[in-house]
Image (cartoon, rainbow, N blue to C red; front, side, top):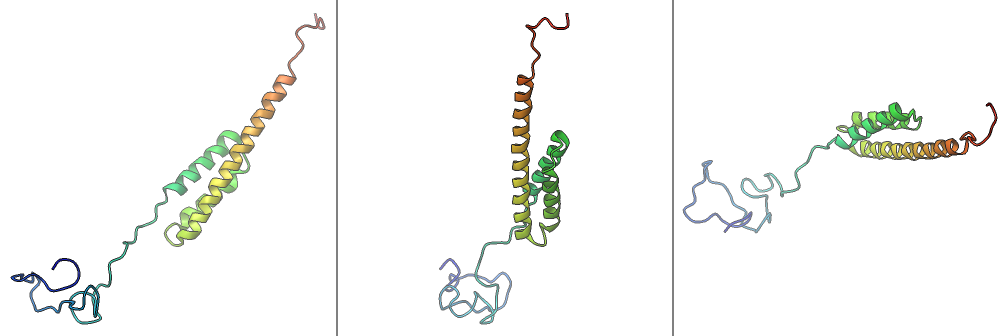
Amino acid sequence: MSGYGGRPPSGWDDPYGGNRQWDTGGAYGQGYGYGQPGYGYGPPGVPHQATSNGFTIAALVCNAVAIVMCCNIVAIPGVITAAIALGRVQTDPESARRLTIWSWSLFAASLVIGIALLIVWVLFGIMSEPDYGSTEGI
């Protein structure tokens, strides 16, 4: 029988030697696989995957670029929250995730403010063009 439960096929040699007790009660019925009842590795689960900090590094870089390029004051707290999140990625991943979301939100706010200021600047430039049709100053 294949899988976790049942007995091994006839003629099977235990590569580790010894006489092991097999789970005769079905998959994880009385114990966990072979060995002493109640001991073993437990049921299979999802392996733990280390958290990645790439999203946080991207938030840090984007906020830093927003500070340098646009002199945007809203991006400064974005850099601070991303830097704190980088410190917490391994120890407190849930807090790091929230701080990263805050950092991206602050970056989005700084972009919106930057675009609004650019539109105001362009409109102000269009409205303040000198009157080339006048004869003043000649």
